[in-house]
Amino acid sequence: MTAPTIGVFALQGDVREHLRMLETLGVKAIGVRRPAELDAVDGLVVPGGESTTMAKLARTFELLEPLRDRIKRGMPTFGTCAGMILLADRIEDGSLGQETFGGLDITVRRNAFGRQVDSFEGELTIRGVEGQVHAVFIRAPWVESVGPGVEVLGQVEVAEGASRIVAVRQGPLMATSFHPEVGGDTRIHELFVDLVRDSTAGTTVHSTS
Ligand SMILES: NC(=O)CC[C@H](N)C(=O)O
Image 1 (tube, rainbow, N blue to C red):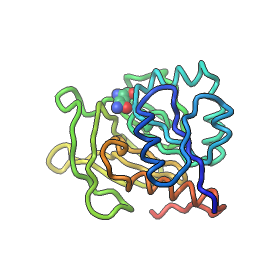
Image 2: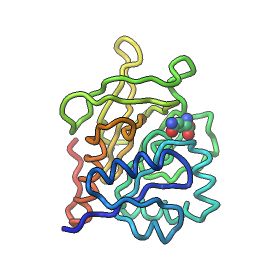
Image 3: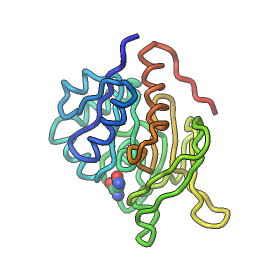
Image 4: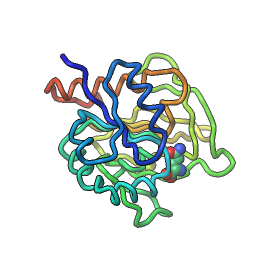
């Protein structure tokens, strides 16, 4: 099978790190700034950055509707941090009126971890990845609630006995609150590349939950 082409939404955000990670995995990786580039990809990464700006730029560059359409038609898409916000169907209060690409039946809270722990790192267990994953959170969102079709892949403990969801999957859509493109661990990207390969091979992607 030929290697899939995976795009990285490239109007704003940590584009380069994702491209490098995907190339390490033997995938053809391209930046997506225009509808024609979106047409050329089998899957898309929406990176971290600033979600309000990213949505506005997507609209300006006439990518917003084509993106929504591709996601609706089942394009495997992986959102990290701001990318998670953009894939969410709902944003908790404070961001009323903010547009998203949507697709994931989740409600997210932006900048959820608060000022004091604005940015932090930790070891997480992620479903589908053996052992621990070192996760870097930068003004990260968390997932407040998930719909019935959403599989929780990872959580982080925020207080004794209280955890928040930071990684999810729904069919061909995946999202993490943290930045898996930082550092040399390619395993989260591998999960996504597998989703893209399954989808280009024409197999149905089943949720394991
Ligand atoms: N590192 C990030 O992607 C931060 C996301 C940013 N706080 C937002 O709300 O868009």
